[in-house]
Length: 219
Image (cartoon, rainbow, N blue to C red; front, top):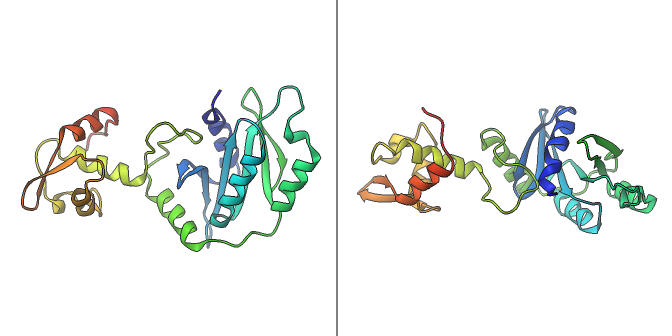
């Protein structure tokens, strides 16, 4: 069993609270945004069991959001930390919400986040919101760590690559696809592009392979 198995039940729970939820954003397992002025940002970290490491992750995330939730698999024998009143008291003092995911995918609310919000990191919060908004759809299951993360930047790079299958392009040809096309081609982070001539770029074999791995919708 992997942490990623908790993602869908937790996502469904947070969507019930009117959050738009996406996985693996800015190094966080789950990030939800709810419209408002300013928007409400919630981060949820996933673990197979409630433990100190999960709490420490929550503390690290707290500066970037309005609410922190910790979610883990409900222990089958009823002896997990979720039943320890000291563990709940600690999370209550920290202002963290607790969610227990059952074997059938049901989510039990153990504790609501209620404490005053911690000091925030505006830059980190802004980066998190920007990545969430730029990312198309929800391409990554939260809780996974062994596969490349489908960031908004990677999505834009793939869109540029797909547009170059029929031949080399100039950055201005791709501006409608991604406003940062020129930056993507110039820095070539993934090795997908090569300069064919001055101001013109072509798709490399690595780029073609990337499109095989992550097929793009037809324009």
